[in-house]
Length: 299
Ligand SMILES: [Zn+2]
Ligand SMILES: [Zn+2]
Image (cartoon, rainbow, N blue to C red; front, side):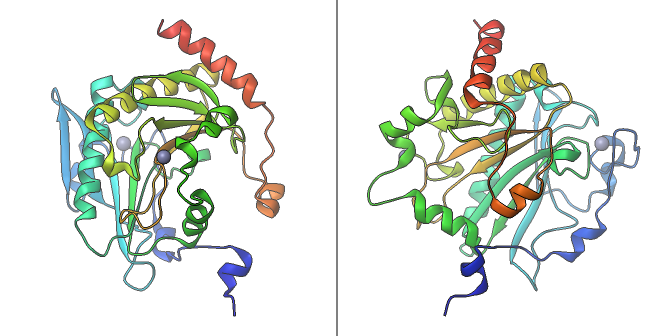
C-alpha cells in the first residue's frame, strides 16, 4: 500500500518552535547578527575573517527546523557580515570566495558525522524570499534522512549512466549567459521564478563538498556579478540562493549547481494547486538583458 506522501508527493518538516523566531527589519537595534549584540549568540561554531572584516560566523539556529522529536539533524545560521544593512552584492570578491570556502569547510565537518545523509545550504534575502531577519545571512540544514521530495528529484534526474547536466542536451535546452574556465551561468529553459539563473560546474560534481578551491573562487565572483545584475534589473528585488546537491553519501547521483532566483511576486493559488509557475517574462528576453548588463560591466 502506498503511503500518503507517495500518493500526494508531499514532504514537510514539523518544527513548531520556529513559530517563536523574531522578525527583525532594517531599523531594529536588537538584531542578534549585529556586532553590538554579539553576546546574544549562544555559541559560535566557527568564524572566518578577511582583512579585519567578518565574512562568516557559524552559529546554531536558535529556532531549528530539526529536533529530537521530528526530523533529526543540525541547523546552522551563517552571518556573512557584521553590518546590518550591507548588501551581499557589495561584498568584495575575496569576501565571497572566503565565505564560500568556509561554507565548504563546514560541509566537510558535517559530512564526518556518519548519520548525516543530506545537506541543504540556502540564503533567503528579503521578506519576499522568506527571511525573518533582514541582516544578511545563510542557513545550513543537515539531515539524517533525505527529504522524500529530493528522493523523487534524484529518481528522475539520473536515468541509467546519463547525467543530464553533463550531456549535450542540456546545452540545447538552456541559454548560456556567461562562461568561465570552470563554471557556466545558465538560464534554465523552464524557469520557475523571474530572472532565475543556475551556476553549473563544467566538471561533474555530486555535491558542494566535491568542488575545487578554483571552482569556488569562480563561483564567488560569478554570484557577486549576478547579484549586481539583479540590482540593476530591480533594486528592490529580494532573492534566494540554493545549493542544489546530491545526497552526501553518493547513493543518488546528481550534478551540483547553484540556483539564484529573484522574488518579486508571491506564490499564488495556481502555483500551489499545480506546481506550475506563471512567469511574466520570457527566459530568452531576460537572458539577453542579463548578457547586455554583464558585457557592459565586465568587458
Ligand atoms: Zn543586524
Ligand atoms: Zn554531471
